[in-house]
Length: 241
Length: 231
Image (cartoon, rainbow over all chains, first blue to last red; front, side):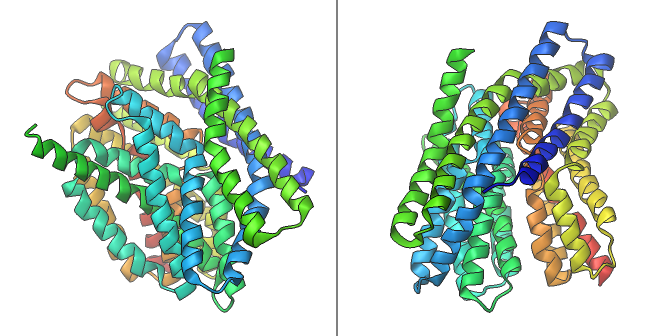
């Protein structure tokens, strides 16, 4: 069961995260913005609701997904058959990114900024597919003990190549997608999964394998969104636009 | 308000249910965790859905408007230097207190065998991030293409990674996930969209995004440099 001390520490974390945001906003408000007080009150009220929500979300995640991630990882690591581990890793990578709140917020921001021409569901699916592929590769790395650099070098090399192939509007979205995919769900559930799997397989540095996974999850959606951007550019060129 | 709540509850359910179903499937087939642990999982999932609902409601009502107002007012009322200073301070002030950063800096401290104190690492990460976010804001104002900045910073990170001690490499690239504060990330992006939509010749879609992603290369380069200093 989750302890009171854990809940208190999550509460402290949320408070510490939201305080500088609010203080900075108030400084801007006093010296620069001078918005009507009603609007300021609405913003502060909304921020308080968001902070409460984040607190509950993190409590729920640490109750539900942290212990289960480890249990699932240990059970999978004990199975003989790395292909199963890769398949389940990919599935869990997809559904984790699907549940990550910041991914959805970014997808909505994209739909709004593009006036609906890039649908949020397209961004969401592209990010989730990217994470699925790279969590699968991450599981492969754990079972074959590959070095992280051997995945990061080609990965970032591919990213540099895609920067030139992708439609310009997708480059920024791709970069931000890498930032949001490694949210609280991925950092607890997938990290625990990787730690559980690598310690169940034994013999390796569990901590190092587990942590490298986060680096791959950060790279994953950057690549998949730029692949989408390249396809969009190809399609526009074909249609003569 | 109540219809907003209902919509966000649906969105939160849609987000979390597939993950819960996947875990239930694994529980039945391979995991077989004790019943008490499984019940705790279900209760935790319900709390997480409620929390996510409130989070989305609050982001819509308060957090995104906050970023949008700051972003839209800055180019009108402030100078270039001020816009970059605001981006820098927003990124720095929201990164320093992130629990992830504390965990990461303790790990760098350990990887260096105590030679690089965690306290220093903590501020180096936050500085690296804030400097890159400010640079990304500068790019919007000056109209530099994002792809050159990203290509140069990825290439620099790879060259440094090849030279740095291996234990720093995985720490450094994990540091790229530091910018993911669920509250600060959307605010910084909203500020950047606000600035791009006000400036002439910039578009919210093409120029507004990328600030958090480019910012996240900052900590990677900062930690790799620390590793090189150590060796």
